[in-house]
Length: 127
Image (cartoon, rainbow, N blue to C red; front, side, top):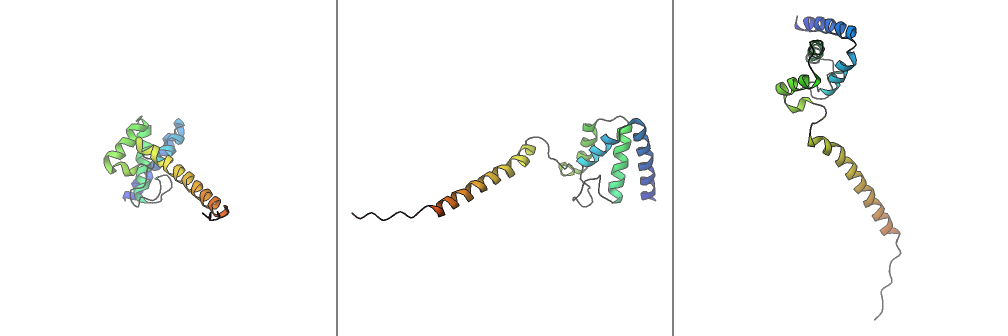
């Protein structure tokens, strides 16, 4: 019964979104939230009853005129910051800079090792 009502709400909300051209906004919001049942996929692609209910809720909130920030804050207050696929604030910078810095350090290390291996051995000086 719960799944049927969630599916019906999803269909009604999706129809309303199509009428107002807000489908892209709904999809973008769905892509920003993690499915709380398994924490492995976004709500947009996950196929569970919880994700379907969240999609319906997101669509109805968009139709109701809530802003993106209000919708994301609503889910963050329920599930915590883990619900967001992309971290907010200063953590977001680290998510993008650490892999780049580690890759550059690794490339530098490989070049240093190769150059050291190709360097001819120095002869011992006789004193």
